[in-house]
Length: 372
Image (cartoon, rainbow, N blue to C red; front, side):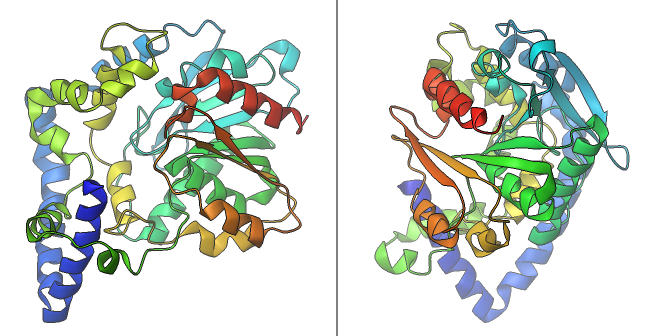
């Protein structure tokens, strides 16, 4: 609730500043500072200030995947301009002719978070798990500061990856930001997608116009919202340096619980930490695609009618999640002649696939079985 209040209050402050012309000056200053700090001295200081490195991220991911028994391959798939997408592939001979399932993680995620799902899902069809451009172990290039162009960079990276690995078509699953990108990709490349599965998707609702009027916000929260709005979402973890791993363990003990059947130590929190404090590339793109209220600058609901009606759509939510599921009704209304299935996983929060992995896997396998 407090987080929503902060993001809503930031919108009030920004509009006030805009009226007096101060927003343009501050935007220029923050833009210069953000670019200079992020791409010049921060990456060089990360090994000494933040206890992380690409090797440590690799080690943390290996630990996350150590409980996955199915045979798999790992590779960097080169796409364009020297960038690469880190990819896990599960393909047994007996199922290699079935439509592959491609997994796109959410904001700040990585392929290791599918650890409780990969064995089960790969028994019935090939499975490809990808670190999105700018996240995980994939390349972390500069993204455009324009929301439309940044989204296009994500989408094109997925298409270039698909062409490189040789997939003719796929079942495309996306969690959080990955769900937003899955639909954006399917609108542009509909012939490559046989079914879309959205898991707790981000970026669909319209920006709320009455948030401030409905919820009084204290002045101190407004001030904090304005002060922190220029920063990337995960900047605090970099700022605290060596305290970062402890901060993750303290603020997100739920991650350890989600994977308690696999790990009893801090394997998960260490993976989350190393994912979060690398050079902020996709993180910065996400910030530029997001309004102060946390909504998408370009809400996907405004474009759902561009999605061809022949592409089936399944939306999965957790019963204990705080994510707004109301867009589901809107999507159904926009697609009266299409298959739109909405499923709720009981006892699950936002990370449905980790909170209730058995129910999630069973439900997803049923969905995929309708494809082939």
